[in-house]
Length: 263
Image 1 (cartoon, helix red, strand yellow):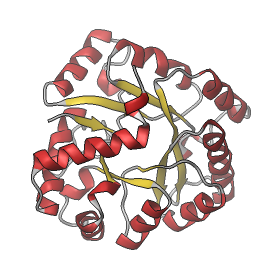
Image 2 (tube, helix red, strand yellow):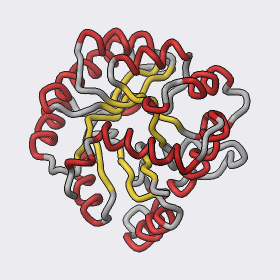
Image 3 (cartoon, helix red, strand yellow):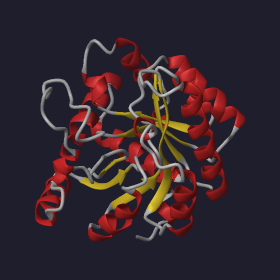
């Protein structure tokens, strides 16, 4: 089975830092279990120039460009100009704008977070790119801005919410990112939503090195764990893993337009 990790911070130090040999080993480890593609989200301005060269070194790696709300407080005043320039110069390895969004738990004022989100939604619309959304306790607010500033679609990364909220995102053309959270029995609301959503609305992710699966708490997550996410999803939906994997690959192809990307 071939699988795509739609959200993996593969540029983080946990995957080798400047040690190219170590990073290559991590990618080989993921490929050995069928993970043939992954998408690295953008998080801050200093990182943006590093993503295209990194992805060019390893076949199957793609990236997004965006300012994560966690990095908003320390972003340079010119970050919007820098992001627009980076998107204008991006190669075909850039498949989305993101990771962008809102986070209720941040000390950054919500108005400032929303201004950053709106600016990046406008850029995504201009470049006709999907967006990778970060939404923590803010689904209804994010939905409001998506309706006001529509984009070509995207994915709600690490979705944690109700069936009603998930359906609202799906109606706007947003896939639901399914990761390790569904392996935790206590995540009842999210598990119920993922169990009954149309399978056409779902894509897999690890969020590695974050968001470890149940039983792996305290350890760095890894893209090689993606088959375990698939297994959890198949059990939750009472589906055959192989059949489910084929549909999930179709979904992620649609999301990031991989069918027309010749990299």
